[in-house]
Amino acid sequence: MSGRLREDLGITNVGWGVCGFTSTFYAMWDINPGLRAALIKAPRPFNVLAEIKQYLVILEAEGRTAELKSIRDFTRSFGPPYDQFKIKEYIERINRAVDKTAADITKEKLFGIAMPPDCVADYAKRIWQYNCTVHPGDIGGDGIIGVKSADYPNMTAYGGLCHWMYRHNNRIYSWGKSFGSVAATGYPYTVIWTLRFGTAAVRTGLRLSGHRGA
Image 1 (spheres, rainbow, N blue to C red):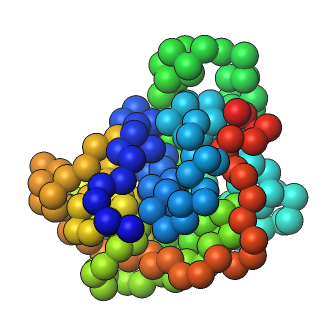
Image 2 (cartoon, helix red, strand yellow; image 1 turned 180 degrees about the horizontal axis):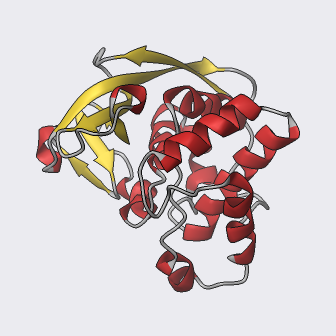
């Protein structure tokens, strides 16, 4: 695919720390045009929350305690107000948002959730059915990139990981915008992880345009 991607796929990351999920939205839009119908409603706040909830509930149902603990602990590492983060309470917060307007939902600041590298890859395979490999450092090319920031020297988990973005044709996509480089984001970021997508694991189905939160 050439040219730029649809930028607003990551707009909810402006107010919430949901970059592991929104970066995957960018990736799916990029690598499989057949999934774009499923991503039409991706910028809507509750659709994003419903997608996150679905992933967490699946992990719970399958007894994936290690993955759930890694998400919980990583989220807590970002400090207040996330230092008391609990998966159960997070899901309940999403449930309470079901009848709220988009404006009211976006006022809630506690929908941030931090995704470790292996969990982002697992989400891509488990929910979007795409194989994704995790590589330390910057191996170049298109893919989700994880960065650390000189502004947060005390963050140590996963090499200092603090944010996920998507890179396509050397442009960076995050927060509903695109940038000519990592430096052009205006933050002192260094790329420390690269998630590279391969072939579809199984036949893909409709996602965000379906009944779950659409």
